[in-house]
Image 1 (cartoon, rainbow, N blue to C red):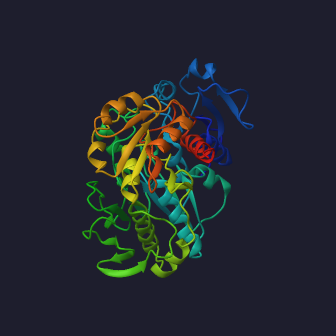
Image 2 (cartoon, one colour):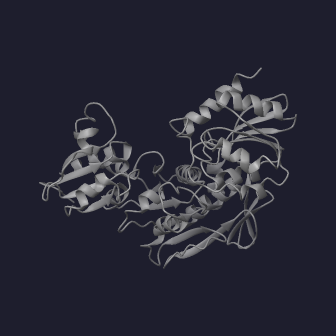
Image 3 (cartoon, helix red, strand yellow):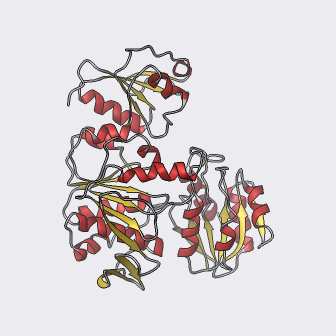
Length: 434
């Protein structure tokens, strides 16, 4: 497909936007990047309108043939509306790249576990001799992958609700719905809107596609064949129990050689195995391929054992569902460090999840006071002014045999640039302990 003599506006100067700009230019389009952020100078060798000039922009009819929006921007925000109000068609970066590739795809969505499952799928295919790469909302953007010219047997594409908002034709041979829980209510007006955005992953499926869905989830999977999985019961097509994986009641392999731990990760493994089956891979070879996979940083990552206390970094838990999954995966009593940005989430359901396993709580960030009021009548609670103080308080409240866990249950942008920096701060504070 060629876009010769066409002028595209790229909204967002981050990784997705730059990937879309490169891909559009490869296909002959003239591109201009717009970003309201205060960035100095040009981005690579593209024409850019950045900062205040982007905020003051006036778009006239005929200026652009297409506007490509990065997933971090809402199409209803002022900058995108400058273009669409003059009749410029809008497309999301993921949808744009999808239209320019014929590579087979596994698409992964869910409130939690997307990145781990995406990595597992890529590792699984590569270990079985099928070339794959994690991309989309994790790793390279889909536009970057397509623009690179590299060929893959299967793309492991993590896809967020933000990316799904702007799809038109996007579909995957294997579509994965891992779970759904409250999140992103700072972007969506209510839970129904968030659910509707995520559910679009199955909007364009055909009878030749497979929908891989966690048992008990209510999402509609359209014409696709529906396969279910669970590590918490035997009501699914694929199950995990007592260290063993099953399909239709038949043992298909053991988790003994896997380095990942916890039932939530066993569900990610199940989903990855099911994806491999969609593409014809065998269980034995898939499990061998996954044997060396380790949980990435900031996801229930053991930092240190000191004085018979485990210090675990789960900074990637940016919502309540992820926090609850972390708690359920532990066998030790817990001192929990939680809190961060106010995302308008209701934390009261967490009271029932503590179940005697959490010994004490330490709160940080913008919602620390609110959390102390929510849980202060249940168990000992303290507020830390920074991560070092939070780790110090948690250590004081703990006993030998406990796990001291950073699992915030919300995002980090009140104190840090992202969950990675927050997790690094936790690691530094733990390693500074005597």
